[in-house]
Amino acid sequence: MAYTRKDVSTLTRAERRRFVKAMLEVKRRGEYDEFVRMHIDHYVSDGEDGLRTAHMAPSFFPWHRQFLLDLERALRRVDASVTLPYWDWTKDRTATSGPWTADLLGGNGRRSDHRVTTGPFAYAGGNWTLKEGVTDGKFLTRDLGRARDPIALPTKGELESALRESVYDSAPWDSTSAKGFRNRLEGWGTGRGSVAWRNHNRVHRWVGGVMVGGASVNDPVFWLHHAFVDLQWSRWQQRHRGARYQPARPPGPRSEQHKRIVARHEKLPPWDVTPDQLEDVGRIYRYA
Image (cartoon, rainbow, N blue to C red; front, side, top):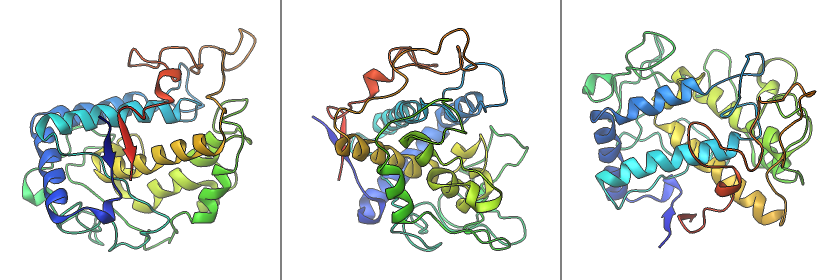
């Protein structure tokens, strides 16, 4: 039977407590840091050589869908009642709403060094030391809204502009793709500053701290953010019936994207699964 992922703002106190307890146990077992390392290893940009799977590529959605499923399964091995909640950043838009409560993810980082000092994932609690990252920092950091250079979370209208796209993705299948749902939601734009970051990308920037970059998984809000992104893929599929993951076939030898992106029926590293197999997960979970 399919289980349900809920809006984080609707969780009961008991549900919040059980979610946090399961997260801390996955961290204690050493499994959580493996997720951080996996994301770092697969954060390959346009300018790098080799296969891109997690970002700046059509497989952005299915890669993170499988990533979320793996973490959720780890949580449910600890407590079978736990599922990943999602954070609707078009609705819960302040630094004190949504997930930023003392009994869930804690609040903003302090002004001096952005270190998070509240909640169960604060370094001082001894349960959340960063062990994998792109820097040597040991504590969780946040800069919600960027006090020195303010940035706003995406609006419902900006999200809607992505959902209106009728095709999944388009050539050149990277961060410069001007058409398609994938890049409109992943959020690689043009220009400088906040206008260059849309939807998904701007949320990472708004949270700040470790959420900026390949080690963003170190902040547990990563999962709530990407559960909402995953929900948008499901909504896009419902709106555009029959629209499929693109490209259906791998780019040919003359293409700059030859062997650099994953086509619909190709294996999606590091798993033995294809984007095609991840387009319908209704038998596993649903969203409330």
